[in-house]
Length: 220
Image (cartoon, rainbow, N blue to C red; front, side):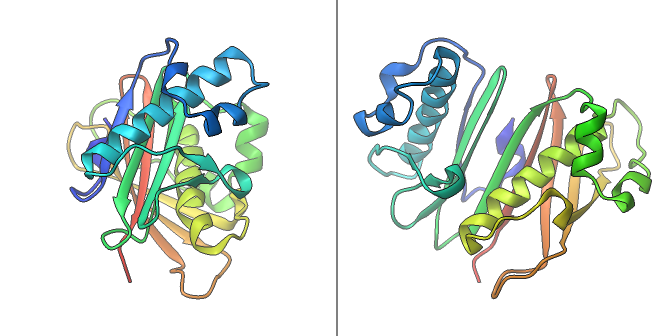
């Protein structure tokens, strides 16, 4: 599914497998989850298995994916990437830094956010904005907004090392004029960082019980 949101230069891999994938881990990665519960270990391993599939697509040797500040994945030199996982879905994407400046992806279950979370992650302008109309089914727009903000953060943070709050991105959605449950979104950032655009453009998709979003920033 995630490939529908990405340009051809971005390698990807995804899985719905929730089984035991611990054999995919390198010792350095094992150390990061040695005290984690089994469920966390499994999702950690599965998404890193996806990452190594993406490396192979780019012709790169397999390598561990460790964690930096705020859990930011540490990718092989000369590449940029992003990972996501939720119940029943894991994905990783990777691109050469000469082709993509930064990338962020996110996946969420296509279900309503709890009301208290919705209030804490959305701006008044976003809550007033009507959902894009189109024929066919619609996603849970509150969950899609949450996902889009996650993708924006994942693309922003590696460039700036600055925290971006949920209320520091104002997002509007656009739906394609088809029966497909997909479209684009525009994120207007309410804080600045040198050399980083204040508007991020992204893609979204709702399919098979999930909402997926992606932001791909082109090279400067």
